[in-house]
Image 1: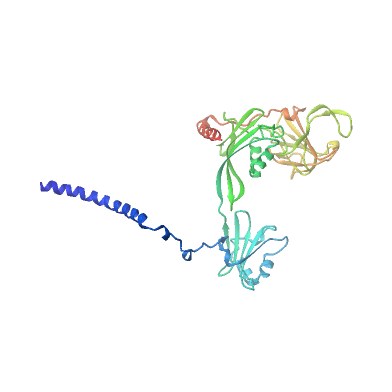
Image 2: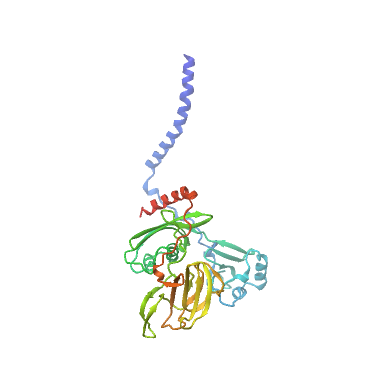
Length: 418
């Protein structure tokens, strides 16, 4: 009997010890809430300390801050000398930190901030030079004489955005407040499958992307995780996938969205005249064939090669003005007329890649105004550039289809949520 009582005690006591602390905490909390008068919950402002306002990691309230832009052909020393920093200290700072930052790389037009004493002398203690949106350099003339890099925190947000076309992709995105770079990203992804000069009211798009922010300012688009475009009644989905070490975009079946040729040689413009077997010439005032497509655009607009190939001619050709001709393969070739100038290094015999800038829009030759006359040839005969069906590049390989299917299911599922 004694043995059984002892055994019970050994079991009950530990359990009680476990329950007791929890019960005490609960009771103490209830008592505190019951007896604390409402009038006693008062914040003592005399004990509150406000956090210092930091600018580039420096307590800004301790200084007068002067902001400006680096002027052309000006020197850093001239800015600092005007604010009481002796040349000896300037020289020491530069020599002490020559491995951190080369002051010869300071760019005119960039911002700088001087942190100066608040007394009548107003000596500069720090100069902060903003090298780019993410990286600044702090020149210290305080306790230490050195240059310190300061990197701002980049915040990343996943965005789900969509819109409907009224006039153009650009105007639709600007009306919704999207970053301008996003329009360029989408136009490049769908450049081979969507004719952005033939968009109709009611066409629509969806896109999932990562956007970067610094100090609540949008820095741009980092990556597209999936997109969809409804054009002329067809829905085209862009699914990112890495194959052979390179990320490209594919449709739902695994076919590449990248074709052998771009849809147009200009990023953003408008068609002012189409391919025709009989058109009234605006200068000669006679009817004659117009064997190309005219894109109206400002002088200097970059003109891109629509596909890989070899330049066979780059020069002046009478009424055609400055012209570049490219042979892409044994079947296709293209020509770009009325250019104001040629792209860097463009000459006969040079090989170009798709998207390379081969010239700039102009009005050379027989022309009423700045535009690009773009011509397309198949087996040496002119064809309508807008009617050419470009062959696709390599699809997703069979050995990668299982991995691609996982990507496809995820992207399609996310696109269906908005």
